[in-house]
Length: 432
Ligand code: PMP
Image (cartoon, rainbow, N blue to C red; front, side):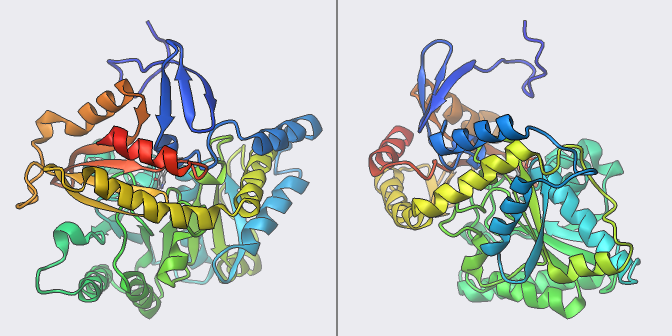
């Protein structure tokens, strides 16, 4: 009998006992090749010596100091490093303990910004269907998964949801990708106007969609059009890069490839690489200045923010990414990985779509390729794949069921950046 409150209360997962590089081992001695980095977390693989050394040194020097009394050298260094490589105009880094906390903090930062500048009537968020932003109440409110929201719906922050950018099913036959992107930006504008142009705080979106819909890569021009709509109505743009950021798509931030700069961007997962819970919000100068000149205080906070050991891990992850040229590796090997997936499973009768960027790939499964009809959710194909993959020693991240009335089974692949071409080939073959 387990006393750990596992999410799936009716089955206890295997016990992980050791991990190194691309591999985890369980108590029964079985080895697993990590093709998903947990949930797109372990960007440098397991037990990276440089990250462990940085954490050990930090624990010996200063394991903890509370931020209401002190800042720390390592938090300052991490913030400097993140701003050095951040999207243009970002001036401050708010360090938290994970993705949901980062999103929650960004939502409150955006709201407080409007209070500070004398627009307290802005109380509404607009986000996207089939998105995931975390499980705390604010993050859940902007998340696009109705099933997750349902039990909590009556107690959530006001938010409406527009369509995600998802050409495989949604782009019309007579439409170019660019026209499709513009149509979606038009839907966002209509949603803003339906709330009242001066009532919306922010539009919240994952730059590249993640867990809930199996990697949604935006069409060219979509985010530029979204940025223009937000600017027209003074609505902030919050990009959630908790999963797709920190090099996962081949650039440190996915929005670099879209040519847009958000007002706030959230990061986590790959920021700490799985070594320590850590997340962050990067904020544009105008937001921090408004708060600094106004109340001078961000009315929010968590006990563990800026934890020194988490900062040491995150700083080491950044150093390794740049020192080892991992962004270029992810871009190059990511193209090869996409081709391996297409070669191995592209002709499979139940593979509808393979999409991705860098080391961030999604495979959409269908009952019928021609009609794109999904499997009956009762078959729980995604759960079967996860189970069978683990039995074959592969960790991938399937997701499925009905999301916003839309059925679908997906497999997310997010290997550590250290994966060799042989590892990638093995992943594609095992998945097949
Ligand atoms: N935003 C996105 C885009 C995510 O993918 C996730 C986690 N899957 C979160 C937020 C929440 O992060 P966490 O689980 O660390 O709270």
